[in-house]
Length: 241
Image (cartoon, rainbow, N blue to C red; front, side, top):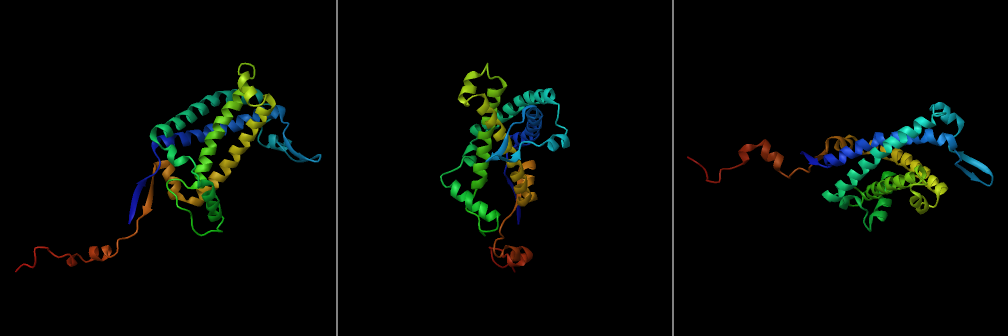
């Protein structure tokens, strides 16, 4: 028997879907800004393995010579990103939803078991409620990353006015490295998140849109036979003449 179960509240769904295009615009505009001073790379023993980002990358996505445009978009949507994140955190606190998101003591161990299950190495999942252990860690981490992006962003946006924030971030240069690393983290999270959504299937995806999921409840033994044969249900008052 199929039953409908509420899973995600409207506020949770709203902030989730609003955040997706905002963060996409923030990453895009951040690339326009980074083009003007792209100095980061992965270099070992004098050999550069990865350069962020090669010239063909900027040419393919038409990211060159658009610094002013990137700054305008980045600093505008920064406020939408901050307000949406604040409303999300506020909702989780007021509604008590944070209890389902914050990792527990056993979450890190159980998260490893979830990974083994996703890789088809382990057959069964550990006990879980609304979110499994891996999701608890990932969703909490993304909140911390969002706060880190705002703090480091302010540190490099107004290093004179917010000098104390820049100092707390280890200086302008280190704040910029942290801000860039967090952006790479968002991209990796997007990729993993989308893959997980595809693997979870339509029922899970629908719950993030409509707020409910359809579950298959186990059948009660003998119920179908009684429903198919109503004559088996006797009158408690006894036989009638």
